[in-house]
Image (cartoon, rainbow, N blue to C red; front, side, top):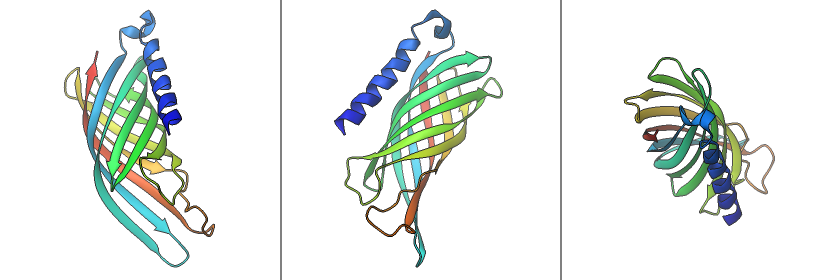
Length: 177
């Protein structure tokens, strides 16, 4: 557990180090974000399907690195709390500005359950996609849908039984330019 958090911190701050280079510094940013999570846990089995929804909160750090024109890479470190479970999300989004204030985000996201013992596999890969609106140069609102690509299979159960955790994140962020 400590090793995962340590490696995550090293990776995130390595990305921040890139920001000090003159090429990136003009359009790159570092920020914080937080908001509301609506999660849907679907358990599938040969007998029946069960769906549970739960609400929670999230908070995290992100950075935004200029690539070209309206395209940025946006890695983040996000913690979410949902139904007595703490998640660590590590998304690496491609961000495309459609207009000066509206952008689309999407890309892969690693998700790890931390702080709770669970009968499910504790890590997985998601795909997230959404949109953001820049209220000012610093404040923005964002909403995205996370779709689990890997199945969170129950450990030591029949192979046909699996589950998925999909979620919607909606929140506000602040960019330090």
